[in-house]
Image 1 (cartoon, rainbow, N blue to C red):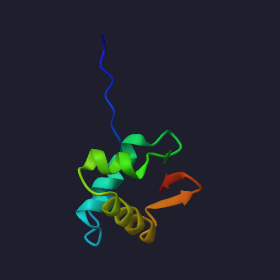
Image 2 (cartoon, one colour):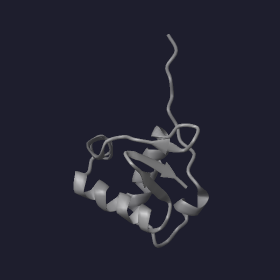
Image 3 (cartoon, rainbow, N blue to C red):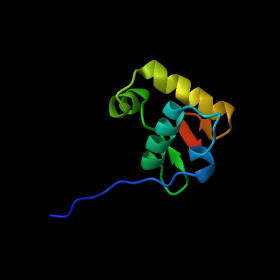
Image 4 (tube, rainbow, N blue to C red):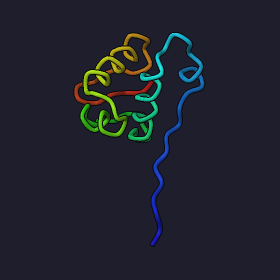
Length: 82
């Protein structure tokens, strides 16, 4: 039985952005794991909070921080990674 590994590709610009919080970088990395070939994803806030071991409010703040820096864009329920 083969095991499927999930991974995501994270932009160097995000990892090295000194103005971006560590929580936002972690949330972005989780979004990258869920993203498809078009760089869109739609995991729930609760799913991200559970995986990250943080509150839903922390996930909300991190997503807002990423949106303010134009690293992600909300399109309806989808999040597009830039």
